[in-house]
Length: 75
Image (cartoon, helix red, strand yellow):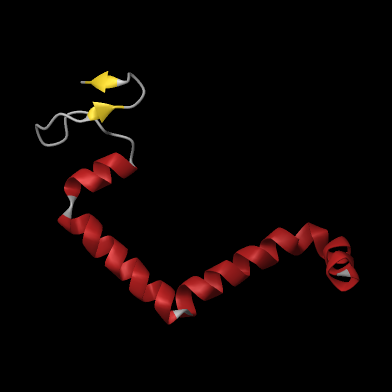
C-alpha cells in the first residue's frame, strides 16, 4: 500500500492524466468493451425513445405519455 501512496504523492500532478490515458487505451483496445459499445449503440439506434430518456427528454416521446418523475404525475 505504501508503494501506491508514494506513487500518487510523487506523480499527483500527472496522476489524472495517467488514469485518462489508461481509460483511453482500454476503450480502444479492450475487445469486450468495443463489443459492448457497439451493442449499446445498436440498441440506441433501434429504440429512439430510450435515447430521449437517456438525454432527459422524458415527456411526450413519439406522441406517447410518460410519467415525469420530477412532477410525480403524467404529463
